Figure 1 (tube, rainbow, N blue to C red):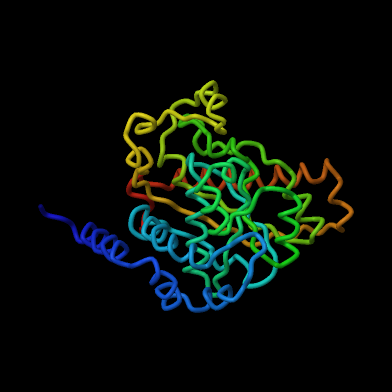
Figure 2: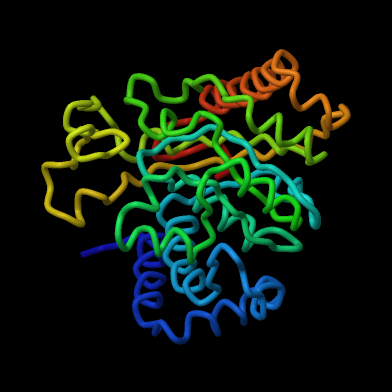
Length: 302
């Protein structure tokens, strides 16, 4: 069967990933990205991050980033080289693929690569197997205390103020940003941490969610129970194969909130700032969607 050059590259790339033994994953990452590995190789992380586990999964998500979704990231250099920072964006996609792709961009395209510690909902830490994976790849349970502790140690913290409502959007709600919870603004002011807004196009279409069945979600203790093109009709793992949608991640310059720490308790102020950042991201999404040629071909110049 004839294959295009691009398809051959994808096949070759995937074959090389499959051939790479788990014990060689860290060595491979160290060859490609020595500064990232050197930063964390001797660290004992109190939240359970494992560089070995990260290295094993990095190659799979890099395949998705480079070959499958062909992600285009704009403004990666806007994420500070050092110091604490909050990455704040729109959330989508049923599974937190957007966070994984942003991690890959930071790990492989930044001049001074660092890990991103995403705050994850309790559900991820209640599922056997998934809990260990989430912890060892760097995710942290979403609490104010954990967020403050990460920022105190100058980590990059990623969060999605839409919460679980973002990933559970139905297809007709795609790219409509739900109201941001102002907690991230309160933390940013209290810790004097810059905020980096991020708009992501692509995630809302990889698993078109036609309806959420709330009764089943409650019965199974899931945050939502979606009905998609493949879930739950197709056998596992095929039901989790995403559509090959083109992604674009737009990363803004940091915003430093010029308020003293005591202003963190000003509910009216923090809600106002949260809405302003929400509307900034919504405007970006609207503009990027207008410029997109199609779901699968992306933007001019890709």
